[in-house]
Length: 219
Image (cartoon, rainbow, N blue to C red; front, side, top):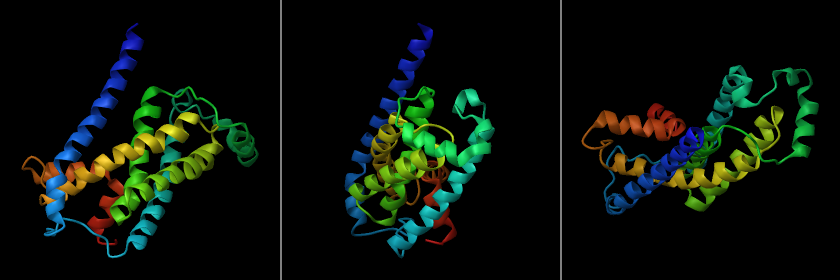
C-alpha cells in the first residue's frame, strides 16, 4: 500500500509540475508580445537557426555518449542493462530492435520524469533556434525514438513503448513550458522573482545545451 501511494504521489508531482509550467507560460504571454517590439540584450536569438541546431545536435551526440557511460556504470537493477552483452554488442542490437517495442519495467521516475525531461531538452533545441512548436515536437520524436531508443539504448535493451510515446509526447509539453519560461526570464533581464542568480540557474537547468551554446557565444 505504501509503495502504491508513493507511486501515486510521484504521478501527482509530475502533473503538478506540468501544470505549473503552463501556468507560468500563460502568464508570460503579454511580456513575450512586448518582446517583439523591444528585446533586451538578454533575449537570445541565434545568428543562424540551422547553425544553432547543428551545434545542438553535436552536443546531443556528445552528451548521449557521456550519458551512456554513466548508465553503464549504474546498477543493472536500475538500468536493466546487461553488461555481459558488450562482447556481442552489434548482434545483440539487431536482435533487440527486431523484438521491440515492448512494455518495459523501468522505474517510474525513469519513464515519467527523467525521460520526459530529456524529451524536453530535445524539443528545446530547434525551438530556441527559431523553429515552431510542430517542427520542435517532430525533432523531439525523432531524437528520442530513433537516435536514442532504437539507436544508442537499443544496444543495451529492447525498445520500449513508454519511451517511444512518453518521452517525446510529454517532453514536447514540458519543452514548450520550459521555452516560454526561459523567454520570460530572458525578456526580464535574466531575472526571476527579482533574482538574477535564480533566473540564470533555472535557464541552465531547463536548457543546459542551449545555455552552453549562447553563454559561450558559439551560436
